Amino acid sequence: MALDQTRKLLTVACVALPCSASAQPRNASTIEAAPPVQPYDYGVQNTYDYRYNPEVRQDRILFARRATRQFCPKIQIVGESKFETEIFGLTTGKPDYAVYLKCLR
Image 1 (cartoon, rainbow, N blue to C red):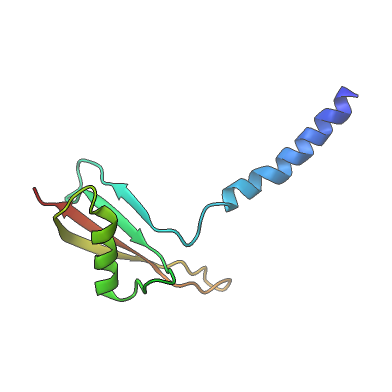
Image 2: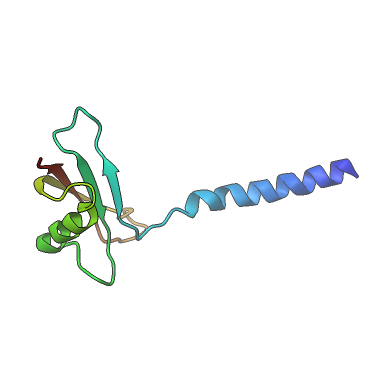
């Protein structure tokens, strides 16, 4: 009986573990504090949402300002990055964007 339960548990684990890796939210924006060696304080990664279009620079900056307002009321944009999400030959995806900002004291 214990062997049968172990087999069932292993089967469930083999099925469930790959699902947890794919459960990461795809269309979510993230705010991350920068490591101390970087010339910026926060990085805001923008993805597509029904409220705005991150391909428009003004929308990206406005979103970064709103998202970090509680951390720093005044910011300076230090840089931006574009990340291609397309897997060549398999999927075509819209790019993700990141805005790097420094808090002004």
